[in-house]
Length: 457
Image (cartoon, rainbow, N blue to C red; front, top):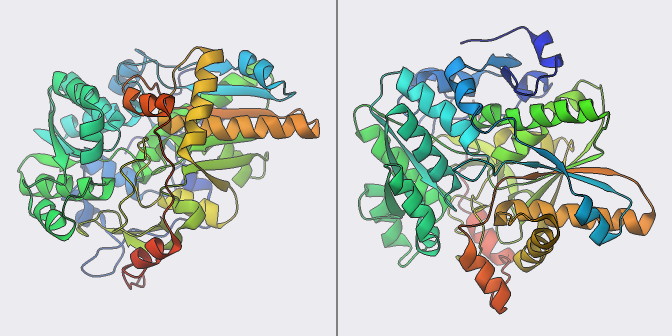
């Protein structure tokens, strides 16, 4: 494990030399992953059958604050990092708000999103371990696109299980993955044991990230020379994504500006965790205070309507158990939801921070999300991804609240990527056929009833 002195974290750099592990500053740590067979905390040996060795070390480390970024990864980052911190002057003017609105834009790379930050790291460690290839899942397709790009760069095979409704809604995202050499399969498929089981239990299902994770893990553990990699949720992913927040903090300090409110969309937690990491670190250490707001879809409201409990990260129940805010591993979001925030649970680290009331959460309806996306596109000139448009919605609402109350807050939100592969959803919004869906209490209770009855040893 390659670490550097903690004091280096306090030195500002436009392209950070390290990733920051927020768990090191948490007095109450996230609950450990549990081995589903024994109920005991997962060991490195347990996880090494699924993940790359160095990524296992990063996953389990909750005391080391800094991990040095290997030179090969930093060299790759230089193609698109540092990413821009932009002040949304035209949006401010359109809203007539005294608030100052900034966004950290992660869409200025070929994959079109922040996902490349972790994809290149995970591909690098897989190659360094001498593996032949990796498997993964993808929802809206940003993670699959990023990983296929990173695997092509490092000469690795890449097999992607794509949530079936996204596979059908976003054929061009699928073709970008194939262009980079990835094999893409709609999930749940009939190619795996768990896929066949899910299809039998849920005939005609449009899939979920939980389903796709199960299939990808099954293939990885059954195929010699392969490991599974994940684009969100895990501690290792939040670690790699911390480069977003580190760059943003460095830029704000050069401007002599401090954000009051930090807003990020929340599905599994990768972009939100990366954006808030160094700011949350300051908050945990008592050096500064910020309002931190997670924004999730009303159709998949893990934080705002979920339970904080141990649950499986996958629908097939073959992965370790994580303590997180969850809707239940059986929960399958509506296929009408146009974004990629379809995961039933949330990062254990973010879940613990939320449970400690160190951050807030709101849920928003997708018609309101796309109205915000349209307004942003018209005045700021970027067509945003549906996922990050959840953050735009909340940022606009916060700015309008400032207008009503006469407050001059500084707002930062994460613009995780572009929406050019999401035109079917934009078409539905423009045609007035995009609908809102919220699970009923009865829907959620049926799912909660199947939560595993486990107690950590």
